[in-house]
Amino acid sequence: MGVRRLHVLGTIAMGRWPRGKEKIRYASIGLRIAVVALFTAAANAQSTKPSYDWSTPAAAYVSLQLAMNQYDEVAVSAHYYAATDDERAALDAMSEDRKASLALHKACLDHFGRDSSHSVQVEIGRVEAEVQGDTATVYPGGKKLGLRIKCVRVDGEWKMAMSDVLDFWLRTDKTLDRALARKRAWTRQVMQLAGDVKAGRYSSPDAVVQALGDLADTYFESAASKSANK
Image (cartoon, rainbow, N blue to C red; front, top):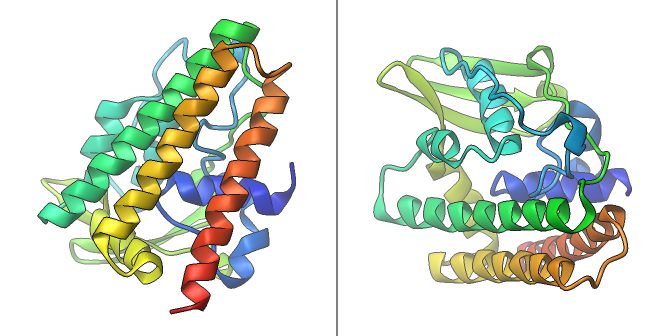
């Protein structure tokens, strides 16, 4: 699976989509790869929970990726900050997306006895951050790569700002209803993929990853087309 596809999957997982030069860059910087973590090998799967650190923006970003990789929905949902009804609706849609990802992960484990061997590395040393009081900008992979994520400090813990995610969605889909509809359509496709795995329609975990990548390409092309036609 190519760099561009890996990046598309990672940015979808974060509620974002790639733009410009971002299309080809992020597979090497340890973003959460794929909505299903591109399947960490079963030999390494979730025997113990990682230790999370929400005390700095960079550490919080890394902890969020680890929580996603562990399918720790409580930790993930608690560390996106939603201040409005629209942001909470977007967060709920992302939560349903992650549940679909977990269903696909479990389907692969049940059917194949393992997931694929693609592992995820998240290195805090590759994450930069600028802090301005109780807000911060996190740069996964460093500033030169161009991806920015807004964080806010709430009760002493740093969280990803859903306002930032929602802003990205609205740039493409223009309205919340359209953004939610597209996100829910993606979630349904992932759930369908999980059902197909259970039904024995795929010969290997790698074939599932390929199918997921094809879905992600379609998702990305839809987003890119809408942005171009704004």
